[in-house]
Length: 362
Image (cartoon, rainbow, N blue to C red; front, side, top):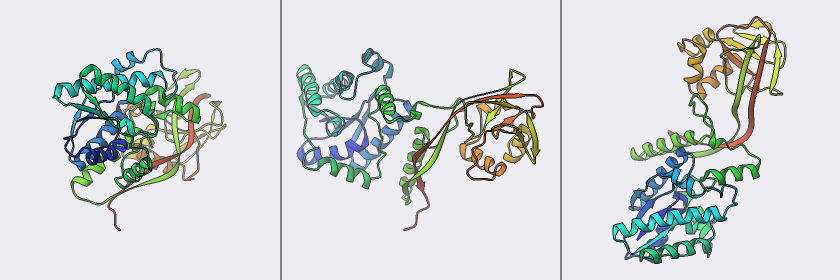
């Protein structure tokens, strides 16, 4: 039986239930999810599915990530709600590719872990699966593993296995609509031009779960714990001196009360030059290099190739020792002597992140 897999949280439980109900079947996993966006999220979900299948002894095949074709298939349905027409097209596409793959492999049956997802319509999934099964001369297996506390059992199993739990279905449009309803920033779709990995970004999670696999391969104990913290994202920033743009690198947790301010440098305290309005502060690239142990040739190089977020946060704390200081702190070639204008758009928000604890002692 070929089993289409959408994510590890669903598949880890679903595959074990299938084994109980179809002990004579050899199960083959098929990870085909071109709807998942961004690609880093796709890689993260695949990583967890590979881990789950390895633990369960299930063969896994990865399908193509044909995202552009999927986007074309759902064109015009961008604003459809969850379980609406876009989802039907999405199921149809993934089920059709799965059915075609099952026929190619000579399998008689196929199914999907989407059937156990509480965010999906079981009726809608069954109709799509059965229609395609008839076309390809297959049998679509559609058990309801949600009933009789199945969803609760699934969640317990996922927690025990410390599986990555995504908080959106997967597609760009579903994510955008969900974040709008939650009045939250869709920072899953944001990557700074520097490529710097941001706190609680998909890229940070991907690093964490990759490291987790390395520890497991070495037989080392670890724990993944969750913590609440104050997160920050830079949306845009522009520094002008005498109305001309000047290269400036904006350090983490820089904020303004409003998005625009202007003024002059009023005083210099140690390494830090202080503007006479809105707590804006500057340091030179020379100071940045010396304090960080780096050797950037100019600010532009720093903008596009900065150190890690944690390193820059540590540098900020050296310069502004108050742990709750949210002053805008910029790195420039030289301290401006003329009037400056700063436009800065950022977001501060409560967030929850996962942290890998290693080494771990009981």
